[in-house]
Length: 438
Image 1: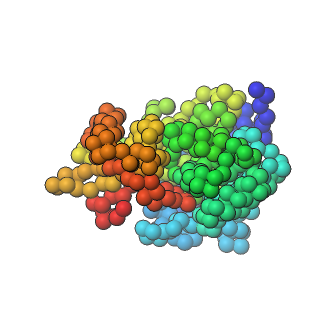
Image 2: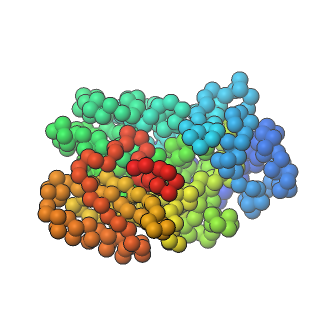
Image 3: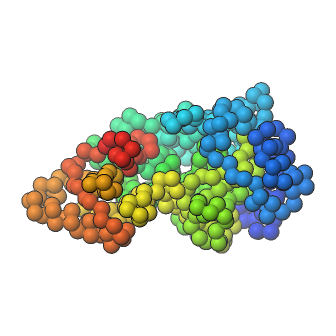
């Protein structure tokens, strides 16, 4: 396979040169925040790191982590490293649990963001002139506009559909003939479901690539999407506080997500001890931005759990690759002393071919003990079976879950289309212990 590159000087750079580039950009970033962000000036003074004399990566570990709570405390503009007359865009989280987190971009930041995503879309085989249906939400959420500017930087055609109105999405797929679609993986499954009801044969469309992110998803879900939409499905990763989508993205080999290490320095820490883990071990991902002007973040705790691979990829790219996230350290369920991640449950479920890729994990207490149950949709054919056959099927899934995870997880089969669909991020867990309702 003859591989092409958006910027081979950066994508194929050797580790020694990349380290020097990162160190230079990191020092400039530390000087930037020291001079322009009182929060970071205080942090650097307290930990004894002099940004003007910064000379090696070991010093980075002396700097305390930045958390989402730090951003909320400094709401709305106190983390900005540029005056408002140099800020051209502001994005924000929903702020459902207090002040939202606010992020800012200069004109240079927007240009860099677009170039990073263009590089990634190019690595997936998309080219100038290809139409890309962007079904991420536009607005304060970074997904829609982040991908939009990257599509345009590539020279491709942006179709800014945003989320929702699924039948219209499918009509646009038919009429505008996009080569790619960008959305959450759960919404891609919903599009496939609605398309099937409409009698659409996705094999007849020109869609060939899906760029999916904003929520964890397993390789089993990838296979479902690829089969139902007749595309290659790729994972893109990002978070608003660091930049938005595009911090990392898979290549066509689907063997980890290439981190744009010329713009972001990754670390993996143990979320309990807050110390760096051995290379290759799973832990919490931490990022330091090294090219952002408007609002850099230093050692930002993502809460996402993954590991890093520094070997050169089959595609030739040399930047570190992160594995698909297995969940978040703050999404971990502790059931009778056992750590359970939703992704572990999904991985088991998606191997059961008789069930639909729609499920809900419900956590509650029974007789003062934590109890976990999974509601799973099945097809009409399965649901119409006799009661004893359904009970046997439920028991077989419960056994698979116990074998994989080590605790008893109840299974309740549901009729088709009874579990709520999502046009954005899917809600997979309802914790009734916290007053949530399914």
